[in-house]
Image (tube, rainbow, N blue to C red; front, side):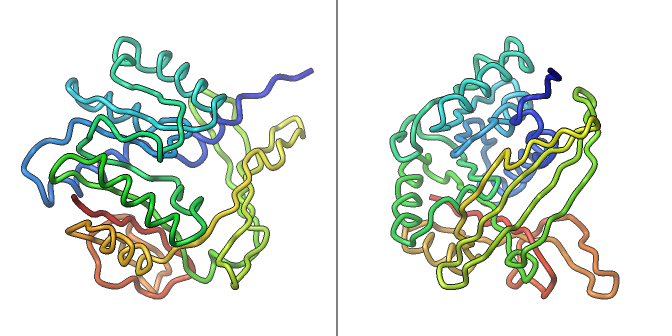
Length: 266
């Protein structure tokens, strides 16, 4: 029987860009602080790819990756040991619910891969943001990502060929199965396809609540954060292309779909 790469390795190769995420954390942090951020907490960490890139980016940096799913946390721990070598001791993968971890306080908390969408009700969103704020050092920053636009609520499947340097080439399929406007909940799936015809269907399933930047900004303000900022790239309506460079914005121009970051400080 053929052996296929672990689904987390496929996910990391297909959708994660940890170096870009670390660069985004750095850019946003220095906008409101003169110190170099050294301590990162990655909530809902999954593969802990961002934590690994953070540790590798500076000899004095440490990261704590919080992941409640035991098998995923164990995979992330093994991958960190493999890829970071001696630096793996600076990445601490903690198997826990993010609401159970309050220390140590850190310079930055990253909530990426649209993990905030796992919180379906505003009371849960507010409770999480309040808890996260307690885990930040003075002047510390939280960074999270969101997605939206008409394309975000339309059922469709998008496919891409992935050719990573350390894995066999494979096909990545993102499926938006259904959207409920009454609850803003969306059912999404990730499938992987291989050259021998095998398909790893529903390798990942998501029951997400789509939050708008406005809703998240209001919740952050209620949770007593400061310097609340929305970041998005610039869209050219003539070419229907984005420039891919994220900057602070007051509005997001109309487009089929967008990805935005929201940052705020303690």
